[in-house]
Length: 200
Image: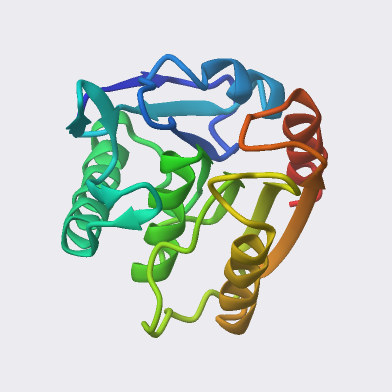
């Protein structure tokens, strides 16, 4: 997978996994990593799927309707990539915190839904529920921050609350943060995520 790895100043800090939204790339969220933890290593990944020339992490059939088979495969592919990257760049595979926006937040949530030890924690900006009707692994010890918009036309408040409930039922600790906005990524929610990160 096309990516950027920037080694951090402090090897004991988590590696921040950056996952962009539709049409973004591995450069997009680099400023966020600096705002969350300027001393952590950063692994920023570009999605392997193109939709009308726009990079994504998995295919969709329509707005808000995921290609579930492709989602499962791409989640596996990303999890394998993290295994390989941890060896290649010599960082702790068990100390990865994802920061994802929109489509990137969805694939990060999918990692949690499918692989118990894929992530230590996750910051999800405007995620949807990746899959329904599946049993999640035991996520005890995992922490998740969800940033949601009360007027988000793509991801309804009900969807955000449903994701919170599903993760909490799997024993994850979830903090749901609201902004009175739409689907855009705001500085306020990034700052809130930064404050949450300091509590880990």
